[in-house]
Image (cartoon, rainbow, N blue to C red; front, side):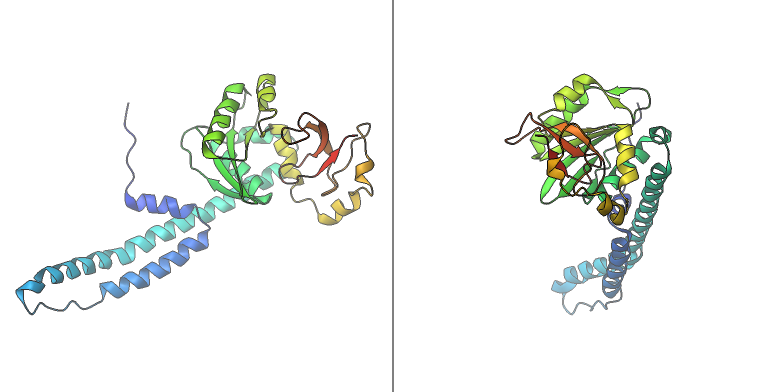
Length: 285
C-alpha cells in the first residue's frame, strides 16, 4: 500500500490560509511581503573584530532567508486566498442548486466533498460560525465544528446514495461529543436514518437531518422576512396538536418533536421545520 505523500510547509500554509476568508490571505501576503522585504534589503555591517563574525553570519543568513521568503510566503497566502474564494463561490453555487431543485435527489449527484461544503454553507447561513475540519477521507470523523452563542456543536455528514445511516454512526458522534465537550451534535445525510439510529439519538441532544429535511431547510433559508411576518399567527400559544401551527419566529410550518433534555424531557412540542436555522417552538397543551 502506497504511503500518503507528506505535504511541504508551503502546501500546509496554503491549506491553512484557505480556511479563512479570501481577504485574510491577501492582507497577510501584503504585510509579510513588506516585513520580509525590509529585512532582505537591510545592510549587514561588516565585522570589526573576530568576535563579531558569528553575528554577521547569522544576520547574513537571515537576510538570505528573507530574500526568498518575501516572495514565497506571500505567494502561498495568495494561492490560499484564491482557493478560499473559489470554495466560497462553490458553496454558494451548490446551495443555490438545491434551493432551486424540486426534490432531495439533487443531493445524490454530489461528491462527499461537495455535500460537506453544502451542509457547512447551510449552517453558516443559519447564523453559525463554521469550521471545516478537512477531515480527510470519505465521511471519517467529525466534518464540521459549529459555534453559536458560546456553544459548540459537532456535525458529521453522510453522503450515501443507497444506504440508511445506522446507529453506529450516531454512537460514534455521541462519544466524540462527550470527549470534546460539545453541547450537541448533528448527523446530516442525503439519505435516511434507521429506526434504531433515531431511537438512540433521542434524549442525547443529537439532531438527525435526512435528505428531505435538509432540502426543506435550504429552500427556506432565504425566505423573505415580509412573508414570514404576514404568516406569523397572532396567538401562537393557543395552537394545539389538532392543527399544524406556523412558527412564531419565522412563519414556517412546524413539526411535532419530543424534548430531549431539560425539565420537559419526553414531552411533545411543535418545532420549526427550518431548525437549526430557526429554533421557534410552540408547546402542546
